[in-house]
Image (cartoon, rainbow, N blue to C red; front, side):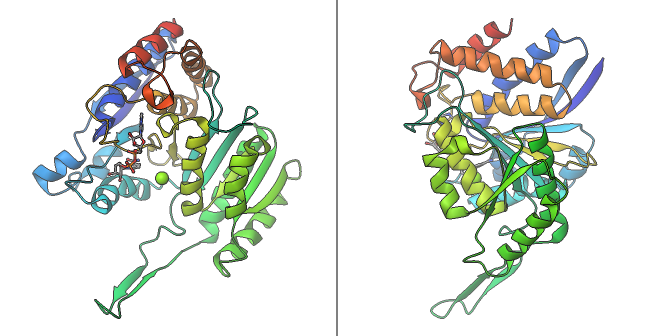
Length: 350
Ligand code: NAI
Ligand code: MG
């Protein structure tokens, strides 16, 4: 019997609701499978912690987290009391960077029982692989001449190592998927970073002769996600492009409340972090009406990463069966509470 030690950070807002809900489902799956078990350790880090202690997590937080197999996180953010750049960089981005979670994987798939806002979704099933450690989200830049003549500079940083790593991961994924990789570029507008990105893509592609490829500018690609999402399999994108594209991915699935994500340390040197795409949703927090599916599907991604694909598949099937019965939260057109949705998913698992 394998015992997985998971560090849990519920975070803020609906994170405090959807994380315990997802853990119920994951425990139920583990109970059905005698080969593994979870041990959950909760850390009260986030904006409440910041308001009490002046930091989002303790100084030795990263060292503490390194003792766990994986990290399961809800959402962070309390924009009325803590500026977003503090909450984001003090916890989420800090963990992603220091744990070298250089790959962010976000599926966008039309689930059974869900209506896409698109007229012709045609059963799309996309996986976006986002470079997660550099690119447009760099700490390089500055502001000078406060006031009227102020200048702000934000540099985009692309290294061969990280660019190639994201692309290779995308090609490997495509092998067990439908054999197609699309690269998101913008080499007509960004004249250094994106021609470099295109060159690396062309080189990596040579090592995967069986995989078909396409190269699309990010603006056209965003339009294609709306017009013909079924044309895509794996999409590889830089940090910013992937960030924007995956919110769109969530939207065409029906709600950002169902979109899952994984921040992976593919070398498995440090824990990876599993967190849904959505934020803390302060507008609906504490009401018990948040959609738990994003967090539960995120748990399925953790099962997959731990090597329990069969168990992961069961979770997704239980989610779809629940949706097909019409048991849904308000964001996807239903009237059920979060608790009713979780209850039905647990029933479906049995
Ligand atoms: P958000 O994702 O929290 O909410 C956007 C909209 O989607 C809201 O109307 C919300 O009610 C709805 N929504 C989100 N998740 C839902 C769910 N599970 N079920 C039903 N409806 C759901 O994004 P927003 O409002 O831009 O940000 C709120 C806070 O969350 C901010 O402080 C932001 O920085 C933070 N944030 C944190 C993220 C993270 O921890 N990974 C990601 C995105 C935002
Ligand atoms: Mg985002």
